[in-house]
Figure 1: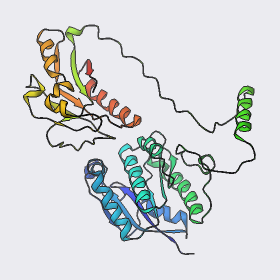
Figure 2: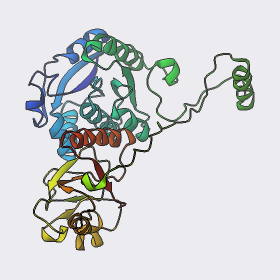
Figure 3: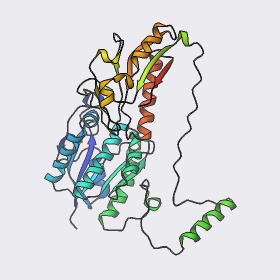
Figure 4: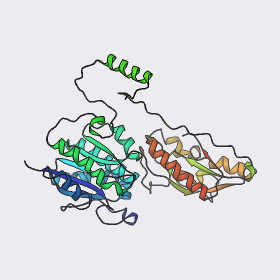
Amino acid sequence: MARLCTMYFVNQFFVGLGGEEKGDVPVGYRERAVGPARRFQELCRDSLEVAVIAYCGDNYFAEHQSEALASLLDVARKYDVKMLVAGPAFGSGRYGYACIETCHFLTASLDIPCITGMHAENPGVELYQQYKDKGVFLFPTGEAVSCMEEALSNMARFTSRLITGTSVRSARVEGYIPRGFRLDALVEKTGVERAVDILLDKLAGRPFATEIPVESLKEIPVAPPITKLKDACLALLSTAGVVPPGNPDGFRTKGNIQWRKYSIDKLNSMKDAEWGIWHGGYNTVFMQENPNYGVPLDVCREIEREGVFRKLYPYFYVTPGTGGLVSAMQAIGSEILQDMRAEGIDGALLVST
């Protein structure tokens, strides 16, 4: 049997170029399978051949996603690949995001199956479940690279079966993370009978598994009040997409995964400087005319002079919030919080967009 022509996608680290210092490496490719691609090919034995390994820096993908995806598609077409394997990304959020976006784009463009893997808490998992691609299969892994062998083995076991033409079974049976929809299947019992069985098992304290799990979000406790506001340093935080002209840091208008902070040290109003608005969720004309709607610097300067609080932090924090994944926004919020604590900020004002 002819081996299936496959493209393997990794970031700059797993192709041997380096770590964070090489995060800006653009899309490239090699014809020789290295790193996880080589081991994956060994585990699949004679069922597939990694014809090309494509790579891209984590930062480059995040800041130039459209260009990166177009280049990866060109590589896939050049080698006429019939399958994509990406990762595994483990707990790396940016890498996981790139794996899912690449799988989503290539399965839509070429109608090929795509297999990847990452830790269950990786932000890429939520994106995968949001896309609901029938041709993409994401396998859970450990959080660290030390889990590589187990991760590749699970991915390879499923891939080998898929190549033989065996019908894909449910996520529960195959081991991939559920995509948010159920596969059609012939079963002996009707839906009513299955529902009653589940209820009886639950009432009797027996193990059971729902067919339609309900997603629940972790409850966030309300922060305690600032007891001495006059002694506090406050910061401004915005999801309105107010950024320097030209969007130099490459924010997305939807599904953003990064944040930045920009200086307002010598400004009394946002109108005292030039700003651009980078947001896909509202009519930005009004915000462009008066960025104080999104970053209320003018009013805050007034009450700062009145002594309502001690001082305003000389930078404002920003991340466009439209279509953001809950997991990505949680990660961004956590990073901003760490920065605020390091800077001695006592509280933040986040206004509605």
